[in-house]
Image: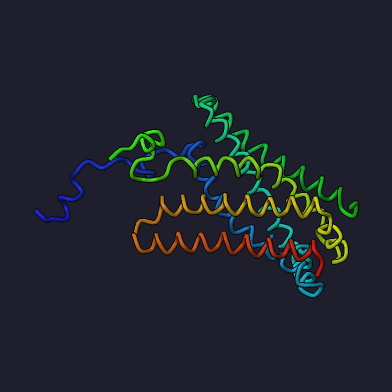
Length: 135
Length: 124
C-alpha cells in the first residue's frame, strides 16, 4: 500500500464540483467577481481624473477612448458591474439584520438582483445621455 | 492577566474586533448614492470637450462628492480585495505579497484620484 493512497482515504468534505450549480451559489460568486471587476474598473476613473488634471492633450486621449464603441462598451460593463455589486450588497445589508434568509427570499433576491441591476444600469445610461450638455 | 478594562473591551489576543466588518458596511452604504452619482457623471460627459469637463469639476459639490466617492471606494476596495485574497491564496508568502500589493493598489489609486480632483477643482 502506497503512502499517497492513505492521504485520500480520510473523509473529505465535498467541494464545489459535488454540488449542482444553483442560482444563489452563482450570485455569491458573481458578487465577488463584480467586486474585483469594480476594483479594476476604478483604474478607468483614475485615468479620467488624472487626464483632466494633466491638461487638454491627455484628456483628448481618454475622451476619444471613452467615446469609441469599445470604450462605451467597457464603461457600460463597468457600470453594470458596479450596480450589480451594489444591489448584491444591499441584499447583504438586509441579511445583516437577520431577515430574508429563508429559501424563498434568497431565490427572489437573486432574481431581483439580476433583473434590477440590468434595468437600473440601462436607466442610468438613459438618464446620463439625457443630462448631456445640460451642466 | 485580565484587567477589568480588558474584560469590558472583550477583544482577547486578536486585539481587534468588528471594525473591519462595520467599516465595510458603512462604506457600502455611502457608496450607494456616490456610485449612482459617478455613473451619471461619466455617462453624461462621454464625448464632452475639455472645457465642459473642467467647468463640471470646478463645482464644489461635484468635487466633494467625487472625493467622498474615491475615499469610500478605496477603503471598501481594500477590505474586499483582502477578503478575496485571504480566501483563495493559500501559500503564506504569496498571500502576504498579494495582500501588500492589494493595499498599494487601493491606496495608490485613491491618492492619484484625490490629487487629480484637488488639482482640477482648485485650478492649475
